[in-house]
Length: 370
Image 1: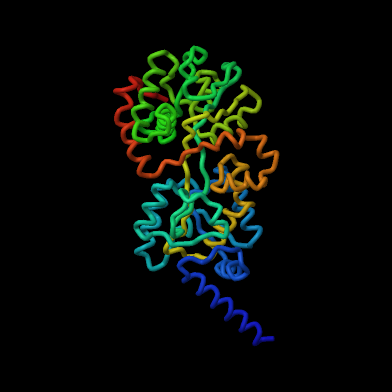
Image 2 (image 1 turned 180 degrees about the horizontal axis):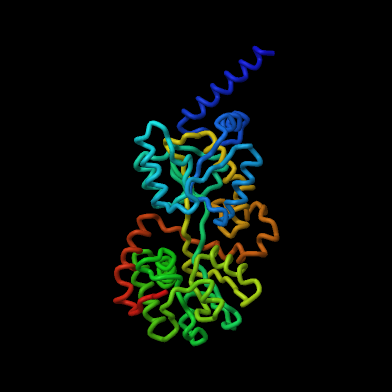
């Protein structure tokens, strides 16, 4: 009996070492990976607040399924703060940073280029769009939102269907961004989305077209130069807010007792903002990190994100396979509304974003205030 126990311990240790050293384990929730992760017994994360994209339920599910405790170092950390944490662990003998990070695509690309992440390809790798994963698995897109129209239908009786509709007389003194494009990524993405719609998808003309659209919207009296949100929708001061769909849908739920909110994905200029997962090159618990990714990219994990209104990276695959429960479908805009989604590259985002931010006030003539 004792010899068998010693052999099991030795086998587990060998598996742990092999998996930890592997540059890119072929992703599968194999017995070996599960055993190695359980041997580590812990997972350290950042930026996974319980009320963000369903992470509270995801963490509970992972802990219950595998018996691995998850510790989040800073639930409200920004992408830049997570990048700083990865850098700090490079020079520490005892690693104190996160095993995994959840960051913007731009930050994920920067971390990979700096050698701060390690390669890993999950079992569902082939179902993830090529544009949303690093070729070598140094980062993987995880979920995204799109810019949508959040509409108070107690005030607005005719729902806008596309960007050009917002210029009509039905929407006089009604349309607001969620912030100032010179400082708010969400607001900047709204201008980019309008620009892509009016430039027929041409990124080279998107900044000019977006700025001109909002200049026209301001000139005809439809634009409200205040930062819109759930409170301004509720008090009817901004009947239409251009907003991330997942935030708009959460606002709708928060205002379930009134007013009535509808969330509309425009027909064109459907611009996504995506986040990505990556495993630290210096992860204290590399196998637990790999198992965490396997969990997130399984059908179970992807549907947990979707239930919280964050579109998982495998969304189209889930739709095509008929795996999305009806109750989730009924809670969101129709799946077909996302067919034309566009994912700006970090380079496109930086170039267009800089132009919009620098020229907003002089072109549009309106400073967005709180």
